[in-house]
Image 1: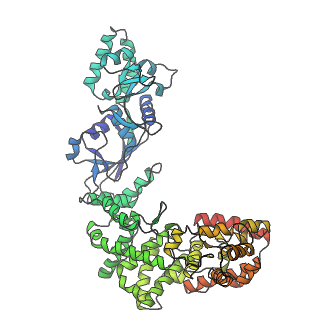
Image 2 (image 1 turned 120 degrees about the vertical axis):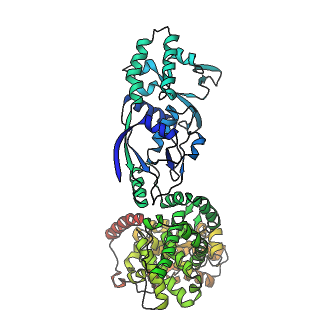
Length: 610
């Protein structure tokens, strides 16, 4: 059940201070800076709306989140079991509580993100000046209540005592919700000025203080009968302006209610896994905590299906229903399975996270190894696993929402082990059209990365040293993808960009070799390799062939022949990897330059969407 009503901020703040309103553990910390706090105070003092808040009622059977106090609330309230948790409005409510209710200085940041501690005041005369913006009446002052200038030598404003507050006409905001403190301050203020400010105070009290104490905000209260996946969806809908909530954080909060810290456990797992460059390389992360618990949910659901016949599923709602017992049962075997998946990727010549065609394919791949790692030592089964993997890459089937595909592929892979005719859905549906190869221009495409891996898997070696590009040399030699017919040469020869910039004219090359190639004709850099770097011509021919390059064509700078033959060679590699014929080979005809340029423009947009 969900109900809506208005609630005074005084009641909300009292509930926060008593520990009856707390935060779910998945909420991020409070991050508002000083300027935003002042603007919020100004809005409330003017009676302007500041948006709705959303609370989740506690005590439901389905929802058990770990909770924590708002920043600034006395730690003695940690023993209090909250009546509700904040789903939306944490930043605003924390800012109001700390600046207008708590007696402690507000720990915030300035415009340059430097940590500062502040108290907040309203300047009474400025508040009553109708020609002045209200935010100019809101003062933020250091925790000693003294503003200094001239590198701290001179005091600009001193509010370190009640008398100095009275003298300067600054009202401290953190007493506004305490009637007795508010009355004592008002009496002291009027007496200090011998009642000369009585009218001013009365006007300020009626026009500013009273409306602020009675200020109300719309509140949406989500009942404790709402399912957990709905809470996740609600939070994402209301939190679009902030950092999106992941299922990992919701599961973390659920497990925390059982005194298990999933975040810390994942940190220890990740410390072990991140050393594999396929999972983490140069700040690119290819496997996350969410991926891990999604894979674990898929694994647990598979075993449950085998035992009970209940349908396999690993959608968000299923991950949110994952129990700690299931997590503990399958955690270790999944970690080992991820490591086996990395070894598999090594064998496919996928060496780093940036070279991973689909990071999402790691989930069913890992689960396949977790179900029974021994299955894949069998040569026939291993070939089936490889075929499934490459069909996913070149069928470009793992680019969208994949939870259903994970399930059908895991069931299909395990059935395929027993029956050669029971192919997984990805193998059945995979189709690579020959013209697609021409259209691969950037690393944003999974198929583009797949082509590079297949070139390496076909035992490509360095043009200069002849050393095979295995994992160690690939990384240590700063290997990257470069043009075989260099860009500068192609542009000077007016070769169509749609041709020379295609994956067909690219290959993995060591950084130092690429520097030698430069931007000259292939015949020239080949001659340089032979003459200046003592590479034997016959050996060099073999090195070039290892990259699926026609030697006669490249030595003659015959781009058209070279391009046609390399295209066919790469299509052959794709057919071998997927175990399926490439469609549309008969459609490979020359394009006019205008057609090619249009193709480039369209496909580069498509690649960015992959």
